[in-house]
Image 1 (cartoon, rainbow, N blue to C red):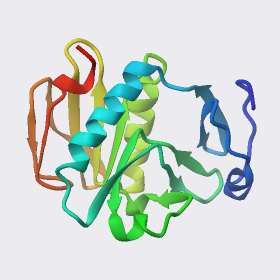
Image 2 (image 1 turned 120 degrees about the vertical axis):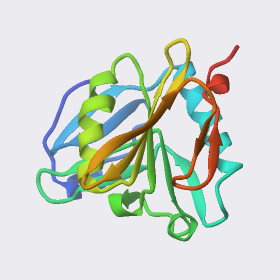
Image 3 (image 1 turned 135 degrees about the horizontal axis):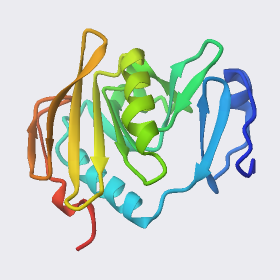
Length: 184
């Protein structure tokens, strides 16, 4: 649709854009950022991790893929699309087109070759500033690993990074195993 071009727009214009399933689009400080859709390994990892979370989350929480999250609605607006989010079921039942950051308990990014800086630096800072309490970064390098961060005093602190199964307490009691996130 935009073929790699960037266009400035406020949040209201973003909301009025037609859906584009051929590209990954985010609003980065009022500028549309367009990139290619993720490859199969990325999608495999996203689905497998989503399944692991879905089977363990308490009934009042749900994991959703590729949902728009408004990090800043004032100009210049920021809307990101994490690979996975965990939100309250009550809020998800309302089926909003995008979630305000305060509804997101966990944001997960699966790192792609073209998203390393964005996921590890830009989104890391933006999600913390927006108050998202938990952020995970999935690295598909061999071996696959997950870095877990928790928000404390407005900044993310490293909880754990491992290629082995992780026992976590936030956003719920979970065991997450990075090993099956890629096909064997």
